[in-house]
Amino acid sequence: MNNEVDLEKYQIRTDLAIDYIEEEKKLSGVNYETNTINDITITNVKLDSNNALGKKKGKYITLEFEDVTDSENASKVADALTKILKDLLKIDDQSFGIVIGLGNDKSTPDSLGPLVVNEIIVTNHLYLLSKLSSNYKRVAAISPGVMGETGIETSDIIESIVNKVKPTYLIVIDSLASKSIERLNKTIQITDTGIHPGSGIGNKRKEISEETIGIPVIAIGVPTVVDASVIVSDTINFIYKNYAFNKEYMKTPKSKLTFNNVNYLKHKIEENKEEKEFLLGVLGTLNDDELQKLIYEVLNPVGYNLMVTPKEIDFVIKKLSNIIAQSINNSIHDIDKIN
Image 1 (cartoon, one colour):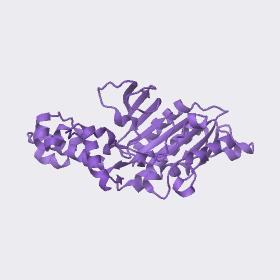
Image 2 (cartoon, one colour):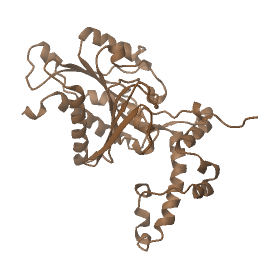
Image 3 (cartoon, one colour):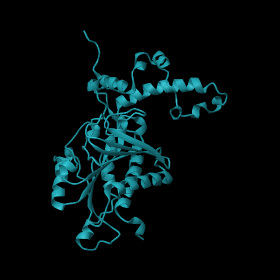
């Protein structure tokens, strides 16, 4: 009798390509490079058609940052995002874009898209009246709502708008899920592969992409939720990291003064497999992916694998929506030339 559990069927929800990438590990069909500019880590991932991640071919660009609650850090992130969007969009005088905010404005973690749309500089009505200044480009914006409210597939609404209005590109914004606590509200992913509305909460709807819509689709997303299983598995790993750090750090005399103020996750900790197994038992023998899948298997059948968001989500989601809207406006319009 085989008592081994097949953990492959217990996949943790994540929309981020970077969640699958491990340092110094070669993956077939996956090419990536990482740079740090102005305290922002930018990872450019390029996936081939047959890639080991099982994700769609295309570019996945990720910005990782520590904080956007002060104006200086927010400005750094906005500048980096603006540059990326300009490179992807390549706007000219014939360009006509629609910015689409996916999500539910009545649910804070899912309200990113609608909040961004509220701050987009829309100009299509001026274009139609021949009153559009040369510093502005033609842009429209809409929040189509969620299927639970409208009863209509979101992609069908967007496809109908595209067929009627005939834009040349779409920018779609949505809230995402991650399988890393550290990336919650501290990551922005930009991709040219489109998006599946609702995929972050396991409610995958029809794809919105160039293949389904017929025009280029740039998707921008921020992970605002994680599975409870992610929090549990990360906590188990943090127990070992805290133990290993304390064991090493307490050897120094100054540690007695600063011990309680040190973030052990910021320090490189060499993993000792024997010590980890001694401290955590069987759990210590599992890698991160296996541990997350095991916790998922334990929580999911009993309905406790909740989707979790940080307590400061109300404040941070507004900051992030401001940054994304500002970056979209700056990448489309000649803001620097506008008085």
